[in-house]
Image (cartoon, rainbow, N blue to C red; front, top):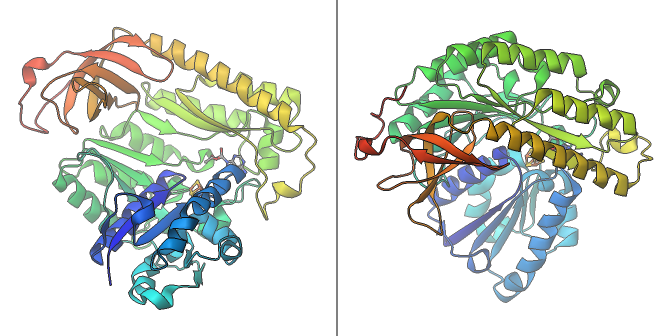
Amino acid sequence: MTGSYWIETWGCQMNEHDSEKMAGTLEGLGYRPAASPFDADVVLLNTCAIREKAEDKVYHFLDRLRPHRAARPEMIVGVCGCVAQLVGEGIRKEAPFVDLVLGPRAAGKLPEYLAGAKDARGIVDTTLYQDSILAGTESVRRQPGRVKAYVTVMEGCNKTCTYCVVPATRGREESRPLEALLTEVRRLAGEGYREIEFLGQNVNAWRCPDTHAKLGDLLRAAGRVDGVRRLRFTTSHPLHLTSDIIAAMAEVPEVSDALHLPVQSGSSRVLQAMKRGYDREKYLAKVNELRKCKPELALSTDVIVGFPGETEAEFQETLSLVREVGFDQMFSFVYSARPNTVASLMRDDVPFERKAERLMELQALQREIQLAGHQHLIGRTFEVLVESRSRRDAEEWAGRTRCNRVVNFPGRGLAAGDFVTVRIVAAGPNSLRGERLDDAREGAPEGKIALA
Ligand code: 5AD
Ligand code: SF4
């Protein structure tokens, strides 16, 4: 018995892409997308457990689903992803109407459990299956147009950052073989995708189980695939960002000028308490090495404020590092204690209000830095990959530069996936405004636009 499905997704790109693969699995079984979660036959919640707030969202969503499930008991509700792994059976205690609880590495079992339909009710599977990557599953990619496609290169994380729940929810690292990845990249490029983003919780640690090739080799090989115009990879751990990866980033022209390199804190004492494996100086040295090899590189980062015991002076060190590096983009969070983590047992004497103030202070600084950085770009010309048309104005488009900055610009006769040349005319903290310089090229065959 099949019908319609809805997948609600929270969390990182890994989760987004897992949802694409789950959608592919469901469509392979004959399910079709539903118009809303409330009238779907199968509703899957692909959840994130990174902070308490992310976890709360899952329970709010379940509360909204509850009356609909009561009215239509044939509806199948599944909780998947990191909260499923973390809470397991406990989810059915909070919300007994949940039929299926599947950890991220058990998602490959969906067809088996759904085929059994009625018997599927009550299944809790949080096994960390070894071959669970849903590898080879046809994804239903969510982006309009064939702009960017994610490719999972590895599952899991072997790091032991003291604040982080991910090693518990996604299990040990498991890399996919080089050949399988290249086959997937070739297929996606053949379908017209312009940008490929390799995904792994600790992507720099990818290692081909057959050939022992490393990420640098993968970037070089993927760059040679016909039709691939941009290559990215996320998320990078500074400790595993080797000189060979940096060399490959510089050598392979398709590798974007943007890198996400989470620093977490500017204080060596805090970094040690987080067990990040580097200190402030080592992080800054890595940034220098990167900028030497790739001068146009835009760096983004993650920062946690209010880690247990973080002093005022240590927070100031974070501000000074942020000033020194001048990140292009930052994702910043107040520390959230997660179950069974080492940090959750640490003495935490910083009141939440002070942590929230620190976050505001950090974010205000980052806004200033971003605005100044963007204003610096006024007058410069960039190759922009067209992503989407504005909802409000049919002649207004948004795209991204190779350094992953968002540019809005007026244009006609465009489609998602086109490349255009844009000159920056104005700048805000979060995006740039530009004008097209290549109107004459309208109607040029897709992918044949050669840009300097
Ligand atoms: N509290 C707050 N932020 C966290 N992150 C990870 N774990 C926690 C936590 N317990 C942040 C880190 C990570 C990003 C994905 O989420 O900055 O890089
Ligand atoms: Fe959230 Fe981390 Fe799981 Fe991604 S891996 S969904 S960020 S908890």
